[in-house]
Image (tube, rainbow, N blue to C red; front, top):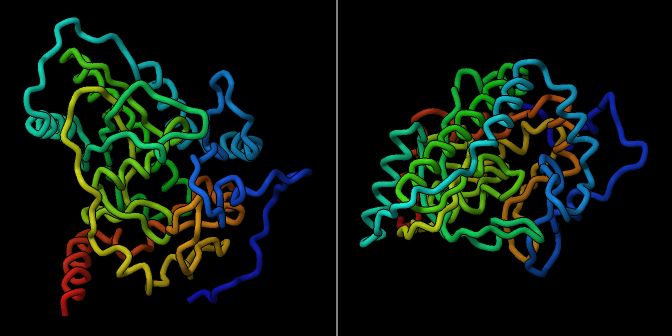
Length: 322
């Protein structure tokens, strides 16, 4: 087992002039609530958007990507043209938001999503200065191929991650188009560049935040990717889930010990006025770039082992009442 606090990772690249700490941009140790700011893997292309401090490393990440992940990214970007579209003139009335929500969820699963939940779009889902003309978010989770992901942090696993982002994007596009065909506005958001996917997924009950900073679901652990559809169609919202993730993460050391750049905190941190699990950005992102996306923490997580999440959840929740 690798000892904790290893020597710093060595990289073949570095900033001539280091940017502002990503932890500071993310609001680590800040006591006051505020919106998140774009820092990495963010488009920053819209008019009026602030420059992204770590944009150079983000660009370098894309430039050094192997052909497999690179072409998956290109295909996903090409799909962006379909995120929005025209709305059918005849609107289907919504008499019972609960019934319609179930119909939309069933459609999402039919299209190809593996997880689906609905929430209102809150402040924590939007970056500083951003706004959207919608009220509801439909969060979609698409499971990755576990056999491929066990090859982290190699290119083979990175290709699978990018492939599932593309498929998740396709699922969101198809669901948004379906809702528009019913006469309601809808738009796909298939990555974290323009909105924050994790807060919405947590509110929609897809799972809970893990020590490694990713959503953990009972069905797939963290072995899935997120996308969303925004709409004004009246829908009944889901509730945040409690599957016992904290009961495991508070004592489990697996991702902490297996993280090569030693980026995972042992305890929850104060981040923009909220105590939650947080990964040290300044340590994580250089290694993430070096390895075309890393992913070690989500694959060594015991929740990600197929079939184990249900058992873990039942065991952890039952122990509370002993």
